[in-house]
Image 1 (cartoon, rainbow, N blue to C red):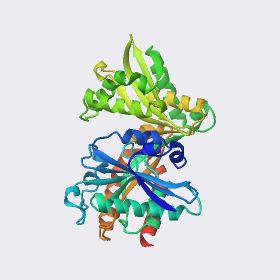
Image 2: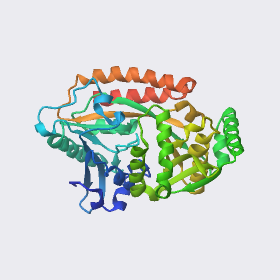
Image 3: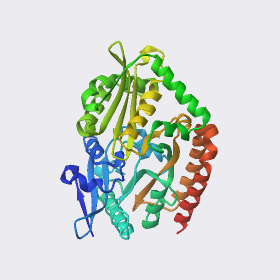
Image 4: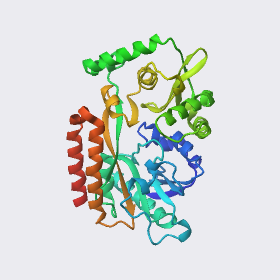
Length: 394
């Protein structure tokens, strides 16, 4: 095997990269192209090849000088940990190395399954740590990985934070059968009643509905998305959102579906989704909050129409992401916990205790968010905790 590091994803054939993504949009070549447009970071792509030229493992890494999102800023995610090492050049001390997808709160280890998988991951990890030592602050931050991937990374690597950090709870709807009726059938009686009520309310509003690609409508949807962001307390100007939507449209627009509804030729609400052959990702919702009322536009455009589209095109899952956990669970989503871990030469075993304290506190936050939906998740959490502790001891 050999390891290679390139600085531009366009140097690699898309089909090579896609062999490792497992149908995940946030791991896709198109999403890598979008993230590469960010002027606040430098991209690297670590590749592990076998002697025949087959790509066995890969990951994007981002050298970030200023992270705009607190959910991707280690100083915000891990405030109790030291952020800077002592050996990197002074001019690079403030740079942070993020491993994996930097937007979307969903990551996976891009390694081909098989007998060589552990070796390929170990080579990938060594190359990432080398970049961290040479170009950042001697730490590499792997964020928003699933429990299985965290366990695997812990087993093959050295120099890890012994206990991974709990970062978020993510929601995915696995679609049964071949039709929306079969989706409804998997829900509880009360949930089925709620879905039907939502759809009747939306239909009664008399909207004209459209489905477009993002590169066909990014200018029109941007003010609605900014309005919805501000409604939820985020600082989002129309101009900032427009630039983001333009960048996503130009790089990943071919994979997008934008569901919109209009009233008297005025766009009222929209939902942006992205698709692969395996999944549909609900990316962003927009709404004109100056209207002061709604007719279940969020659920119709963000859940039900995408689910219908997924069935029509043979996709197995709808990825809804983090936040609003109870509403997503009631509509068929399962919850998976997402974790972060640091690797590199400046890791100290004493940091394990800090992580465990954080995890206990953050789990209480997630329990509160789950409310009466919590019991269904507890067995998974207990098993994950046991496995992660076992990995740390080994």
